Length: 192
Image 1 (cartoon, helix red, strand yellow):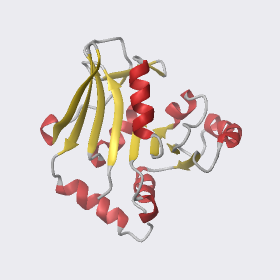
Image 2 (cartoon, rainbow, N blue to C red):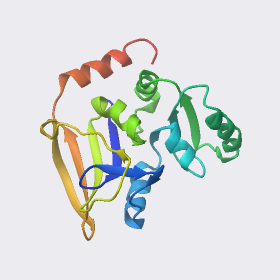
Image 3 (cartoon, rainbow, N blue to C red):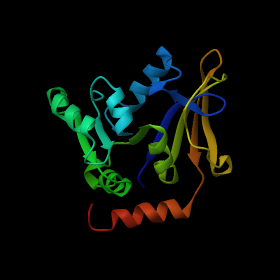
């Protein structure tokens, strides 16, 4: 079955960002993010894409955006110079298009990580089999949040301290037939 993970750094109120910036940027967490996602697929919205200096290296960057976003279209022209056989960008217009793409057999050796922002996390939460949360024992002003989720549908399978007051927790979804069925239906739709 397809593994789709949401990865984020959150505070005690699930705050993730303010003013299109992360509210926490720990060196150790960035290293964890790079190690976890390198060589795989990262899925983001247009605001997250525009906040990056360039496409994330050694990953397939999937950007979920409307086709008429002028800023994204301008940036696409610039980012061509960063593309290599290990770094690529795919622009898509729907969650379904992303799910069909990552379910293709040729993607089976790659994991897919949703990296933000707020609305993208919300759109993909239903399909997530795993949440990788760097949890900060603190609260900062935020205007972007990780979505509330049903804690009873997930269980902590790994927990480790990153630095003082910062813990990485990996949550796996308990068996949820609706999610399995939905993804299997998309895979079998003939588009894969």
